[in-house]
Length: 95
Image (cartoon, rainbow, N blue to C red):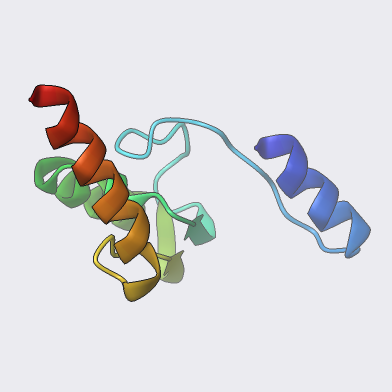
């Protein structure tokens, strides 16, 4: 994942650093970064870990720092067919 982001930054001639680590315990100094990008991450965390994540984002971000986070909702219409198939497979296997 980090390689893809680095390559994207390089190709777009954009400056930035990529850090891979635990979202609830980031290996970053406090008040040191301008932005956190969390694509398709937050919805995988438990409620307790989501709270820890936001506390950690606040800790590492500079004043007026930004967070870009995307969250998927599994109840979206486009996932309905796959969810139905998975339920049928799950309950069919139990029988």
